[in-house]
Length: 348
Ligand code: 1HN
Image 1: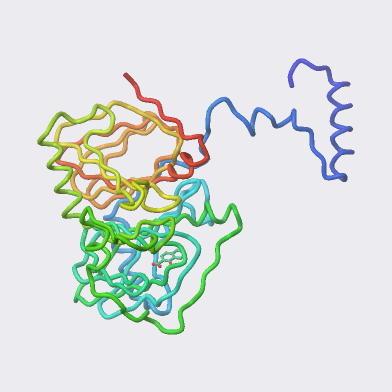
Image 2 (image 1 turned 45 degrees about the horizontal axis):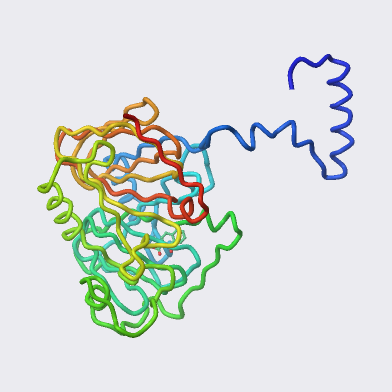
């Protein structure tokens, strides 16, 4: 409030002081901050280079086992939220390492999780009694409250990007977990069962969704995703803003694969640039293949394969590919849509 004289200001300040012991505060002093004309993300644009992270992650592998750590992960912590295990305002991401022969013990928790596989051949995740082998580029889902453990039956390190909705559930003070009574959950179905039942344009004629609000498919293989993107690239020009983009879907309802996190993949052919757009959802971008750059509110980041970038909500973003690029994204868009405040703008 400007243009008031000192005496009035002092009167008001004195009034505010008398409000405090009553646990009261004047809205008019903060109204413009708590409800601004445009969303203002507190998150910072942040770039994690795989070349920097990988040696540090492997160093952690010499310091403690996956069993000791329970989950041996380096959190991609946004500098705006130091110490809070947040990558964007609402999402958590981390790089997880499993060395040959190790087990990340079985447990379950209220947060939903996704894994985007970066390297390694013989890593696996078991979800609710079914195992899936984790190959580079695969999207693996662990639904809320489903038992899951991870292992590595190869002879090299297995590394993936974890994405969880922990800060969202944290806001609702609903984060909790339970350890399983054994390091691995018993296998009750053969590998590939879920993909056969739900991932072939088919679904069981009887029976409810086995994981409620989460997709019953828990591995979306990169081979299929990549093939689809290359196939649609044959059929027409890339969209000016989205290039070639397909979202991962829950086959039972056509919606997003988890109740909180939206996931999609974008392919930019070499030399293509997108026109700037912005949306309210904060996102994490991971470079699967290729090199290029992303401009976020005018600041340019040059990226290489396996890098990860935090993109705050409501920032203008545009992409340029200097080779054929494949980018994996996850964001809190599901929540924005469900609560009716998702907004998007595209520059002409
Ligand atoms: C978790 O359970 C996993 O299952 C990864 O691999 C990261 C971060 C916080 C809490 C639980 C996993 C996690 C996590």
